[in-house]
Length: 456
Image (tube, rainbow, N blue to C red; front, side, top):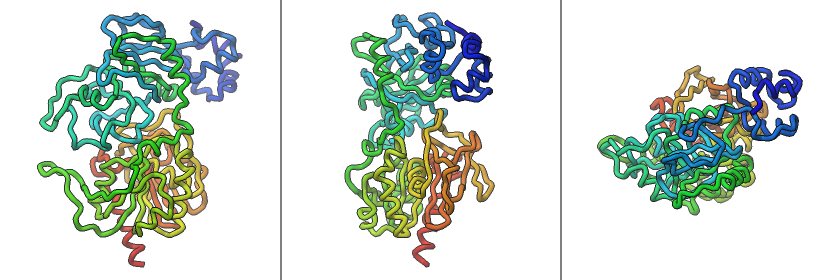
């Protein structure tokens, strides 16, 4: 294996290496410190240096009994599952959940709680989730903590084996729950090493294999991961959206009484379902909305036929530019009618596209329940829950659209508002309550906007 110093020398020094790979000198400095170059650059390095792929700088391969990544196909003792990345890296572990093989984008989530809500969030379609918190599954599963009827994530990656549930609300073990829904899991791998790889090189494609016969064809699994197209350019909203319109009346959950029911709404709202989380709909109902949910493909005419006082654009998976092919014309039709709009996550990105801005894929995405966002209007900082791999390009925002929120992690856009039409949106998830109520004001703001327009 060649070292990072070898590669930098072969390419003519740090500046030449940075120019060749399209990165900054700071990135070269970090690679030299870590003695590893992110996998996404290996193909270009192979072309530039003539070296074979197996000589690219990476962390030294550990012994077969280690929990860290390795590249040979020897099945370690006790291993029943494997995570195989597109670059050939293999993480061996112990399988649970469904005995099957899935291919997906591998992402990480830093949340310490709420794993059932995360697994059923439709925004995770096309992804396998690695939790950085080591103890996942300890509180079991129950029918009240669902964001969709079934898990949407393609797989689950955890550090520790799932233990017996220790919570009075538990109805079913996480292992059995995943198995009943066809979702495989893998435990016992070095999730820190995997998270660092994603952090430095971006989310890779990978195959989670938990075969019933215990046989692993690593070459075939690597090829399967490498051949998968990835999320960029992929429209997944059509896969997770409702197939027909329906009314939603369930409101927020309260300890001791469960979910409330909206019986006295003040305004009528149409929620466009690009992959809507149930708790968003509950928050709308609790804010005084009579909610009608329509499919992602609903046209402006179909949305306006419900005579809404306001329109909500939901979260969802995939590339917003791909979903925007049909969503943007519908949203623009609603904007032209002057109906107030509120968007969350994918809905935020689609509103931005409809107003003339652009979106782009983040290097690693934002997924966790502890992300600070500054409200530029009030100066307050909110602790937010986030789950997105794409973002709005602030430099592309047209005149008449102002930035309202910004991430204090990396400075990316977290909210916009139009100064010409009644429309605003945020990138994060106010309904997920990490603050726990830092961001609930947004639902009230939406209703106030609707009532102001009705009174005008």
